[in-house]
Amino acid sequence: MGNKKLTTGLLALSLLVASSMALAKTVFIASDVHPADYPTTAAVIHMGEKLSAQTDGRLAIKMFPNGQMGDEGATIEKARAGAIDILRVSMAPVGGILPEVSVFNMPFVFRDLDHLHHVLDGQVGEQLGQKVTDSNLGLVFLGWMDAGSRSLITKKPVNNLDDLKGVKIRLQNNPIGLDSFKAMGANPVVIPVGDVFASLQTGVIDAAENNEPTFDTENYVVAGTKYFDMTEHFMIPEVFTFSKKKWNKLSAEDQALILKLAKEAQAEERVLWAQYVEKSTKKLQGQGVEFIKVDKKPFIDATAPVREKYGKQFSVLMQQIQETK
Ligand code: BDP
Image (tube, rainbow, N blue to C red; front, side, top):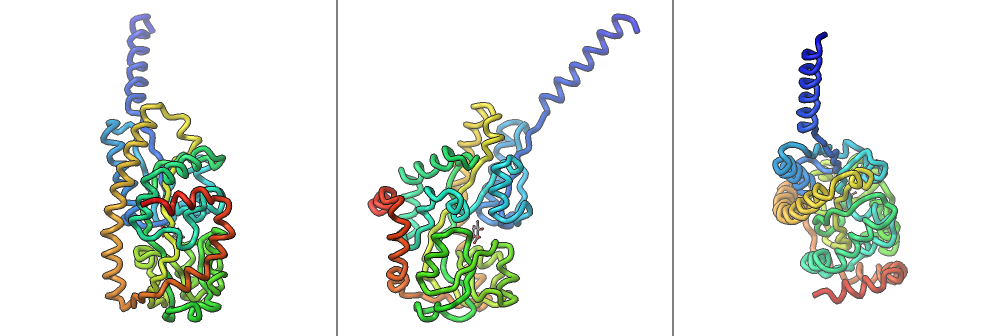
């Protein structure tokens, strides 16, 4: 081969390498237990579209919805290991691993959703987000998402503590949750959300507890539950995070862009959430679910020892939460 040919060949090769580098695309793997149209999932999918648009396709997000990547406990481990890049989970299992951020798992700690929003949008929300990032969890906090409030999902109506006595109820993997239900006289058991339907249907459990959208999308009516007993005992926010392993390899500009889009996703999810609660409520009512307005006082009183026991470790945070608006 003549020298000229060689040079041309090398030039062509280097052009090829350069152009493929310009096209090199990083696809972040995202995971959620919910279906693609659920508010949390939809907001992250939309975030991915914006990320691609704003980086000319250089960065993208591929969402694996419906728990395809495993239950929440498993996906937390995968995100820590770097096998999942973007993870949206409930604070319940996160608090199970990192007790110092478990204050949001306390029963009856927020007055209402507005109160929760003010807490999340204020100093406490910021501090806890920072704690997640600074901990050895291996996750970078991107934002909070709404999950409303959790009430009882039962086969028989629950109006008071007596009705809850001995009821086998599924809980998320968090000791505060378990203790709360023991204090209310129920018989709680930890089961991954993906197994709740079958457990209800086969009678392994009598009840679940969750918000209206999950009641709806997980089809608990078909599994035999007919009542939504509105104790609103927990208001556990969702958290979305980025795997630290991958995060530390990103440029400062890309990190800043992701954080900015995450803030937008947080705001968008809040709007989608309110709409979805309305839609699910109507659908559940159409399926014959009875929404029972429960007198919360006995439930609040019964769980006082739990707030007492766990509240000590975050007494400052509890104080700040109570003083918020
Ligand atoms: C839903 C949360 C989801 C949890 C689920 C559960 O959005 O992250 O996995 O509850 O109860 O409300 O496990």
